[in-house]
Figure: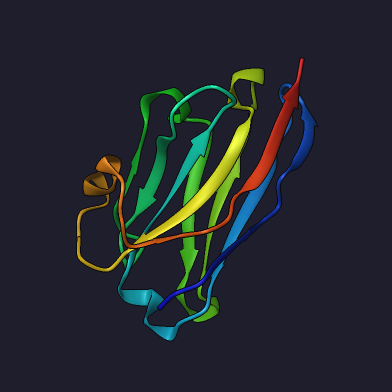
Amino acid sequence: QVQLVESGGGLVQAGGSLRLSCAASRRAFGNYVMGWFRQAPGKQREFVAAINWSGSNTYYTDSVKGRFTISRDNAKNTVYLQMNSLKPEDTAVYYCAADRRIYDPQALVRGTDDFWGQGTQVTVSS
């Protein structure tokens, strides 16, 4: 069992930046594909970004390319999402996810029934 705890959310003005963190409870974290999803009010949860076990391969949804960067520090069992040039439409609850059964971060686009965090709220004001 892996517990994922997100942090770093908050309120920011449009054009600002935030960095989300997701801390995992297990050392085996280094073997997992990690990713971020988000869910805005009244909308379905959507994929944002994912990263493979070594950090050498990443994948992003089109709407965040060039603005968001996913990274990981396996020594700290933590994955990050650096969000720059934030827009009001980025407002959502952001969830961290982990999947131990896949190797390609693009495969996480379909979602996972492996492990999820509780989410952290990001609000971008205009």
